[in-house]
Image (tube, rainbow, N blue to C red; front, side, top):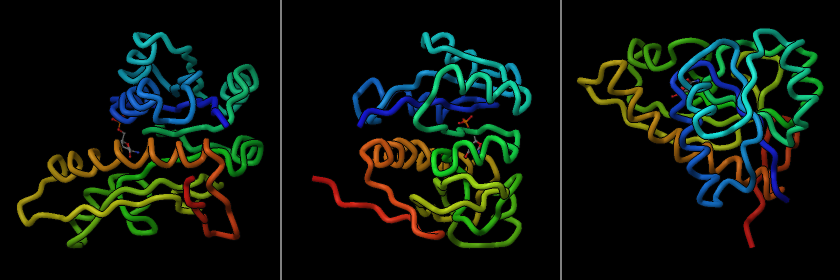
Length: 194
Ligand code: GRF
């Protein structure tokens, strides 16, 4: 199965860059056919420069229209900061993934790296999860742990987590594209590869 991916962005776009690089290497199981942003941002610029179709979708109506046009198999949120409403999460149930820089269910929402430092945890990390109507609450696909150092700042910790994000997001998307993920209740099973 080869996947048509629509990637949602709002910020720098380092995850988008990792996905585009993985696609070029044939490691994503699909292609990025649309990059949508809720606002003009460096990630949108990066997409244009890479020759990918882009759309600004400040609300769900605009996003629904863009998705209707490109008909993606999977919607990939990569630092997309606007919450999606039910019309989108229902229409794409089981076909929207997000990446979050913590080991969910710990530290959902904004500034998870700061939350981890303030809480004093020794280990945090990154999570790829399916998106439901909640905030960072959907079924977990892949996680990677990152140790918190005693002298970490939000910036140093974020950078080490980002490196893991760039590794596990393409991997999770490839598993989806290969049809190896199945959902039972809140649990995601991963079928062994051939
Ligand atoms: C990442 O840490 C992502 O997990 C979070 O926002 C950040 C986006 O970074 N939701 P980038 O735009 O992919 O560089």
